[in-house]
Length: 328
Figure (cartoon, rainbow, N blue to C red):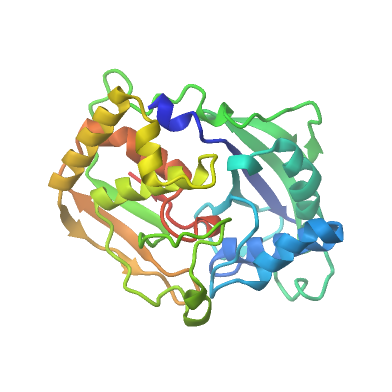
């Protein structure tokens, strides 16, 4: 699996925001508003030339699909809609590819978070909204399966340096010795849309027609294990350095042993059918896609490393808005 992982730069930040007012009501789908508010604050604070790609990306939003001009994922941990004083809100920011840069986080994104917590801007500071009503209690950075403190009790550790490959340290992408658990189901935590991505540059993973018609302009397929592997290859291609990288290029970059392992996984996935599916269409004010649980015949061990990697990277369309997240 190392040849799969090696080209993927990724820094994962787990953010803990603590409500400091009487009552806060979160939007139905938090990542959309996180993207819009933080993206706008970033654009407002940048010099004109640097702000242009942010303003362009924000202006070209398709319905329910905010965008940033950097490869990133905003994933809100499942929670409730109303929060009182002192209650924490958890969400994760993942910077990927060439944007997996700790200095960029410290100099651009973190100041925007701080500004969002104390804003009185009438665009965001409305009755019971999150904006202007929270403190940054803590921020952690992933090193393998562990989380290391970057901000503790509101104080930034200026000596900490996050590296773009530490996310994979110690991850074997294989069951631990003696772990004979059998995985038979996936639960989609956020909407998944596994239609092929248009060949567009940057992080705007929708077509011009969808900007007008909405992201549900075409039928969205029910995920299968084979579709998940195909989507994983497409996702790795999207994150691999190089202007013309395709899933075929990813395959060609793999050494023979990894090609054989992947081919075995694809062959196994093609044989495993969905036994029971309960996905439901996402609510109308969420990004389009399927949510809920899918059951399969027992998944062979050869598939598990690829599914574990896919769960970290997110699959399909609108990954910036946290879409394509699942647990086994």
